[in-house]
Length: 283
Image (cartoon, rainbow, N blue to C red; front, side, top):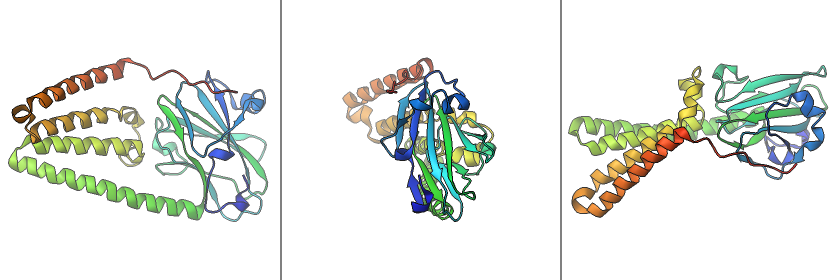
C-alpha cells in the first residue's frame, strides 16, 4: 500500500493478507517465518470471520516513500476483545501494542473509542505491519488508514452524529421518567427501561462506555448483551399495558406471555451455552 498515492482515507481490507491460527498459540516469529507462506489475500474491504475460537493474523505492507505528515492505522470496530499491532521499530525488531475492549482504556496509544495506532512515516520505504486479533464473539473488522487531517475530520463528524443520537435518547428518557414520577403510570416506566437498554447497548458496542464511563473496568463490556433482554422485556410490557391487551385482545396477550417465557429460556441458555464453534477457512 503506497501512501503517496492515497487520499485522506484508505480502506485496508483488500490490501491485507490473512492467516488463521486455530490453536491461538503462534508467535510473531513463527508467523513471519514458519507460516509466512500460508497467508492468503483478502477479497473484501471489510473482514468478517464470524464466531470462531481461532486467532487471526493480518499482514499489511505500507510504503511511506514521498509522504508528508502523520498517518494512522485505525480499526473502527471497537468491540474486539484483543487486538495487537506488531510495528517495526527501525532496528529489525517489532514492538507490540496491545489494545482491546477487555483491556484498560489507558493502554491505548491514543485515547479514542476506536483503536488508533500511529505509523512510522518519517523514514521512507516499505514497512510490514502485523495485526493479531481474537475474541469470544463474532470477529468483524473495518481496518483503514487515515492521514492526520482525515482522522480529525472522521472523529469530528462521528462525535457530532453520536452526540445528536445520544442526546435525543437521553431527552426522551428524562421526559418519560418525569412523567412516571408525576403520573405513576407504569407505561412510562416501561418506556424508560426500553430507552435505558438502548442507551446501554449502544454505548457498549460503540466504545464510548469504555472511553468515558468505565475505562478501568473493561469487564463490563462483556455483558452488553444483557441490555437486549431489558429492551425485549420492556417493549413487551409496554405493549401489553399501552394497548390494554389483557382486556381488549386476550389472545394476543397470551402470545406476549408465551413470548416472554421464550425470552426467559433464551436468557438462561445464554449463560449455559458456548458460542458456535470455529469457522474453517481454506489455507
